[in-house]
Image 1 (cartoon, one colour):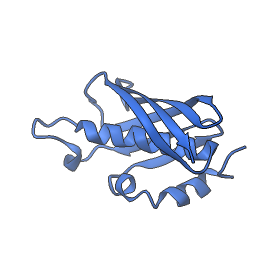
Image 2 (tube, rainbow, N blue to C red; image 1 turned 45 degrees about the horizontal axis):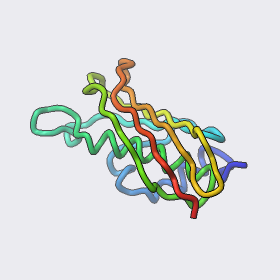
Image 3 (tube, rainbow, N blue to C red; image 1 turned 30 degrees about the vertical axis):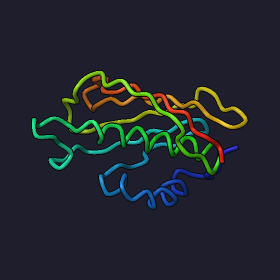
Image 4 (cartoon, helix red, strand yellow; image 1 turned 120 degrees about the vertical axis):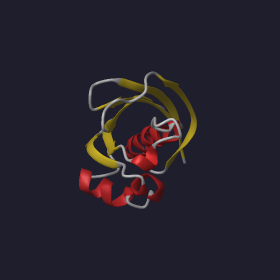
Amino acid sequence: MSTFSSVEEAREYFKKDRFATYNGMQLDELYEDGCVCSMTIRDDHKNAYGGVMGGVIFTLADFALAITSNNIHSLSVAQQVSVNYLSAPKGERLIATAKCRKSGRTTSIINVDVTDDTGRDVMQFVGTAFKL
């Protein structure tokens, strides 16, 4: 059973996630066992080389983890994550698609794939969320 009865309810709750929302991250779709979040890449997301900072990509994936894990069991927090940066984004938007792979008694394992709007694979993220 989901914590949030609608995507609008989840959006309202996660407005309090100020770092993510300040950086333009938004919840697009919500499922019982996953979600889709996205953001438009801005100049202030870029590093000195002109590429998107890894922390920006990580934050989008972490935001998707938070929404998915807390929809499965509120309150959940990230316990451990592993990321592989696959390619530099070339598009104008980043899209994070999260899916719960295992929801256990005390933890959930959630995969998040981050792509850009050209379809390019940007990051593979696997997170463990601890159920409080």
